[in-house]
Image 1 (tube, each protein chain N blue to C red):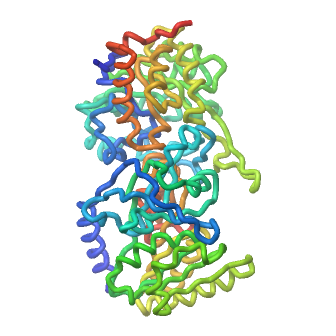
Image 2 (tube, rainbow over the protein chains, first blue to last red; image 1 turned 180 degrees about the horizontal axis):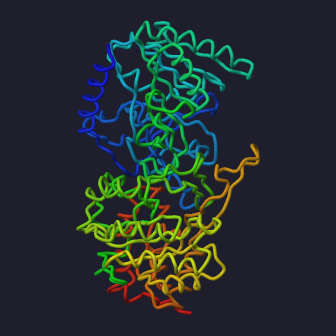
Image 3 (cartoon, chains in turn orange, green; image 1 turned 30 degrees about the vertical axis):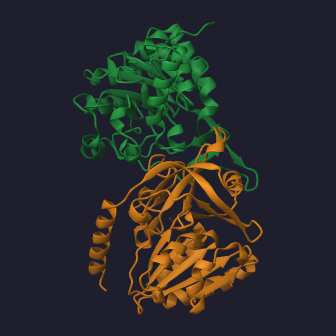
Length: 286
Length: 303
């Protein structure tokens, strides 16, 4: 598929999806908060926020802002989380305790009330017929749950998860079909010395989705991971989208605290212009 | 009850404004409430030319507040007038433009661009920026420069009320307010952020790339109340209270110490429907307190 055709398809999709977009800003209760891997991460389930008919008006890659009511005045900001899935169990988020806010969110119990707004931001592109490589760095796995579940041709998906904490801390059940087909690959980075091996693994998989294959690479994870993926994709001629994890205060484009540098050298909000960007639209050091 | 307020040439349907830099250009908040329900909103500080702002990281959460060093990233006056203002419900709510410049002349030129704009209700002058012509010290720290900047804006503002937003980073805020009055200000707003910093002990780095930034949020409310009380007690100009407003009680505290209206700021980040709810909550609290209008309690602090 040529670049022109791709742009038309993207544009049409964006237009139709925008018309059905339905953001809410509401109080929700926790349904379940399940520790994974002994509490290294948590699978947080909330009441369904009712984003339009059937809850289908969110798109994988989008995120929500979540702030427990119990925070009062003490912690100022809500915290951003990728939407992992919305299903009969409610809105699913994966929480990695990594600071004051996420530590407390990990401690929420069923019945606790949070304030939540979303769905926010841009989403990963879906090209059913394109060989698509999903690259997750740690908790960056979350958006690929919904992505894989919705993909019309999952046989075209391959997932690589790089992790530093125990694999048991990741919700892998939703990826069972991929695992069963031998298209789920995990890499445990125990020390910095493992990094080269992980990068080599990424390089091999990206090569399969490069220029010759006209593949697609979608990545979510920490900044250094995303910049490495981008570099490897550029080298392989692979088209690539990355989901940025910048710190943000508002999630709606107002605070300008989460900006990334775009290809024209301008600062753009990663909450509204992203979090998912085509790497070609970002500066080398986004 | 009637929540409307009228002061310094500005009439608002209720006393709730939003603070510059915390409400984007207003449009960002339309999914979460009806802008027309607000008394008004102050848009992100606008400069003559677009600015890319400071390097990242730009924000840090602190106890009961946050630090920011965004660096006045904005689209510039031309793009604001062409792309943003026409989309705002300015017939139904007051759109206040916050002006940012680095010299008195530039401030005057900027004011001139908005003087004839029907959709602009008032101009708010941000005197917290460094004056590049005077060695980089903030305008807001020097009464003579506050007066000069205010006069430069007032001369070019046409019939738009001029609000001067005062910095709390001074020894005597009344002297700053008096200087603005002498320069021709119609209204004072206080406070801007307090200069502060945050440090990461593990990396030994400041949490902001700019090292220092502006502290806002509930942590600064006591300072804001004190400043507004001092200004309203000493000067005949109306004051808009700003600083850490997170509830209707907070807003009425500012009215009690003398404010005619308030600006909600950081709380807009804690939940995007905050300002819209604040309008309802103030009405409910005023009713509970048996107030017929805000005029009935303004400056009613019992000391």
